[in-house]
Image (cartoon, rainbow, N blue to C red):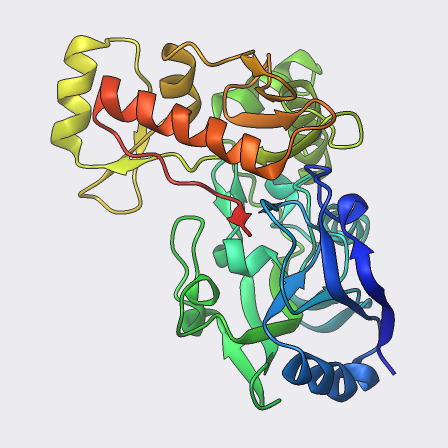
Amino acid sequence: MALIVGRAASLKSLNSFGIEARAERLVELRESADLPAALDLLRAHPPTLILGGGSNLLFTRDPPGTVLRVSLSGRRVLREVGSQTLVEAAAGENWHAFVGWTLERGLYGLENLSLIPGSVGASPIQNIGAYGVEIRECVDSLDAVSLPDGAARRFDGADCAFGYRDSLFKHPDGSGWLITAVRFRLSRQPRLRLDYGEVRDELRALGIVAPTPTDVARAVCAIRRRKLPDPASIGNAGSFFKNPVVDPGLAERLRATHPGMPVHPGTSPATVKLSAAWLIDRCGWKGYRDGDAGVHERHALVLVNHGHASGAQILALAERIRESVRQRFGVELEREPVVV
């Protein structure tokens, strides 16, 4: 049956912030055949926290009930129609390893999303995105199981209500689903997305004038390694805040006062997107440290645990940052990580 790792189990190594927290019950799901037994345990000991890679999570206390760690594995090519290929990955697969697996097989579309931490199952929940690409562009469908009653359902991409770092599964009407596998539409014909100047500049620095998708993945990895700290070296969850999506009128008023403020296309023609990192940096937070809770010296969007910070201390720092941006720019920042 599903492996019960234990009671009062430490979760420190299972979250990228490295925060000490303990689960009343920690259940690891490794095989699909164990799913019914795991669901019985979850219903017997609610509530449930689903844990994938732990890279988008901040513990401020011990989670009550049961923590379910999804470790389902498996990757396969389902079918090919012309240049289009449908591939499937189990929810517990490491996201970056899966991207590398697709590139090795000449399957393209995910290269801009290289080196994003976390698991395949978490990718549609967050609608992960980077360097001009979001996962919703490639998701064909996914399999999920209802935690309350065990009913299985296949969600097409259109059913997932994808938004900017958002999906159905982050809202009350979709939060009771456990994703078990995700299918992606990929192509054997490269369609490079080089919208971001950073990627073009990195390719130029590497001396690459006719890049392949693998070259783009290499460039993205180089940028991310240079800008974002490795959680193995210092606890963090990557970008802590979303880039705020605002009315163009507000953006123009802000640019009149702050001419250097970057503005990007928004999630619709009626919106634009601001750089949360720029706003935080202008408020003087980059490199700030209060005890072991801090802001990374190279990236103002990354909150870090220097060793022994509690989740409550990191959250308190995040709230101070939000308030300072609100006071100076009149812009509300929204957290990315799930806070327990």
